[in-house]
Image (cartoon, rainbow, N blue to C red; front, top):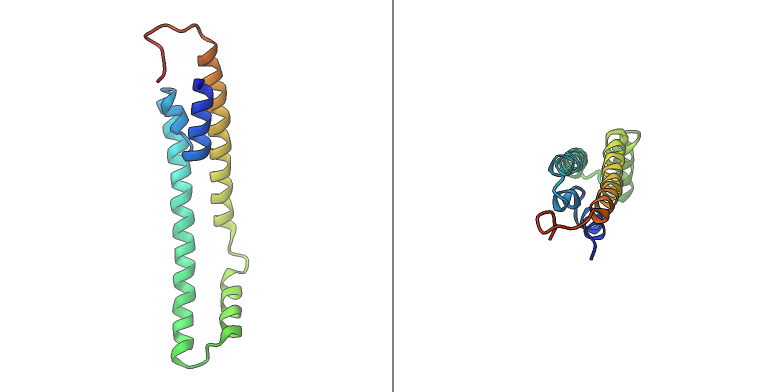
Amino acid sequence: MKASSRAMLLSGLVYPGLGQMLLRRRFSGLLFILGTTAAFVVLIYCLVQRAVHVMDEAMSKLVNNSLDLQALKELIERISAGSWRVENICLIVILVCWLAAIAHAYFVGNKIDSQPRSPSNQIY
């Protein structure tokens, strides 16, 4: 399998930046890995924070015996209304990093594949 194909598959199917690491492009690989990981961490933090907020309010309503399915639905809708900005930005960053890592790995891999092979510059 060509280096471009292996690198593209690693960046596309496993994690962005791993294909660059395979191609020995450590700086660009670290940029993709750090960017994607940071966006994942912020996304998970925001979602957990929202879930904790919903649980706190639901528990207070449960203590007062005023929690039913409709009240829970309204609570979730009220807390979620209009507050997806950070989450959307994180999802866009993840998507852009993923697609850019695939494209970068493919083009860098093709460049490496087109160079004449010597025993010292082979990628395993």
